[in-house]
Length: 183
Image (cartoon, rainbow, N blue to C red; front, side, top):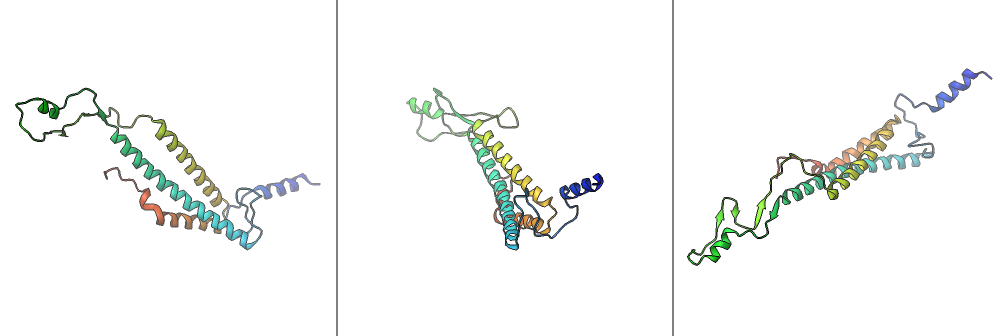
């Protein structure tokens, strides 16, 4: 047996096509997921559409959570000061003071102090950074799965991913927009 022909046979069965194909028997993520019929191929394409929509949902969910975490961080800037007498409290204790509400430069006087952040970013918080890291990892995993589907060079898989991205963006794209200037 000629070794060169056996090597070329094994190489051709292992290499990926470098041109787009319309084959309905293209494996997805491994030989175990190879559609054997038109219905199986359609089901695989529908799965890819749903996976791409899920990716857009993850992006939108992350943007919503980032906004929620930002609001919570901004709200944590206000710290209640124990034992601090407010201007309103001093007026109540002074018998010579006139009745009325006290509004200061900081608004209505209360037992709070505004704490300014020293750095341009929020400090590490386990309750925020762990979910953020997990969500980002999930987004990367789904994006890589979609990338692998596109890398099969199957036209149906490619168009299914694009359709899923379009539908997902159409459904929830407005939530994934982050504008730092909107408060």
